[in-house]
Amino acid sequence: MDDLVTRLRVALPADAVLTDPDITGPYAHDMASFCAAGTLAVVVLPRTVEQVQHVMRTATELRVPVVPQGARTGLSGAANASDDCVVLSLVKMDRILEINPVDRTAVVEPGVVNATLSRAVAEHGLYYPPDPSSWEQCTIGGNIGTASGGLCCVKYGVTAEYVLGLEVVLADGRLLNTGRRTAKGVAGYDLTRLFVGSEGTLGIVVRAVLGLRPAPPGQLAMAAEFPSTAAACDAVCAIMERGRAPSLLELMDRTSVRAVNAMTRMGLPETTEALLLAAFDTADPAADLAAVGELCTAAGASQVVPAEDAAESELLLQARRQALPAMEKIRSATMIDDVCVPRSQLGAMIDGTAAIADKYDLTIGVCAHAGDGNTHPVVCFDAADPDEARRARESFDEIMGLGLELGGTITGEHGVGVLKKEWLARELGPVGLELQRGIKAVFDPEGILNPGKLF
Image (cartoon, rainbow, N blue to C red; front, top):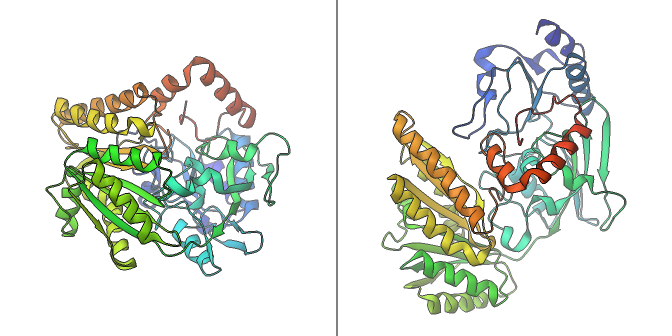
């Protein structure tokens, strides 16, 4: 390890190479529960592409594992350290290099925070849609690594749809350019899309060309209360079947609504079994909300309350964004699932999760990106109670199994990391798993890039 640190410092500033355990400790893991983390050897914080290349060449020569990291807001253990690894933190590479209103593109380094980019492009009348709940902290590099989504996915799609090109440092230090800056392009295999969602197992993203959209008109939201989650999910199906295109369609169950109230005193309706939030950013959002409100009433909504202005709309969206922090206050630990099912199966998924909560005698709250069927069951438990922790893990696995039974996937946007390795194998099957491992071997023949993740 002394040789490793000495060689890293040849081309890195002294303050970019950290070895003090009191400082490096937090770099060992992200925000996921039940995910083992090793004891890292060193943390490096490069500021340039050349410095990243030096790190990778050194690691390849010494056969040392490298774990790339962003802001460590991940929920699957993908950023957790391996034993004796180099943690390669990219948070210092945080420059927005270009915003081009004509081409509607931005060129950024991986450490740029999502919200920072969103605000910067807004000054040019542009919009970067992907908005994970942690958008004030999470980085674009991390978003690319896990193919993040967000609240606006139902209309605008996820991160993968906005990554046009990448610069990637490979395991041996070579620099690879993928993709394009043009509006269209189909030259060769789509290596750009391959890196999106690869969780740092194929290469280190050091620059990204991102597609932008014109900024939409102001958004208006509404809340609809339902006497059951089944009725709320019927409303979601009706909204999508009628061809409506909300910019946001989110669902909170009774448990998550009460948790948000307890933490924020927002005064959300605690008598409701499910709260559906919808928003439109069209030319006439009030008319669109009225039409959706009628569909909600027809599905059994007990009350439909449209926001009167942007401020009220933002308050509703803040309630949804606070759901996870609020659930985290119920018990000492949480496990956050990320199961995506066909929209038509959303009701079965949420009701099935409630049955699992009863079976294991646990509090499990569910928020969902209802418009695309992406549920986030949050399992609350006491980490100091071995029996409760065991039940939490078993319930988590049962929820993933339910998702697969309903024709879904084990992760819609959080990634696999350490947490869902066994379940990825089940979803892919032996042939799919073999091919994915083969792709990994092409890009990382020595197996040093984020080992132990995905497979």
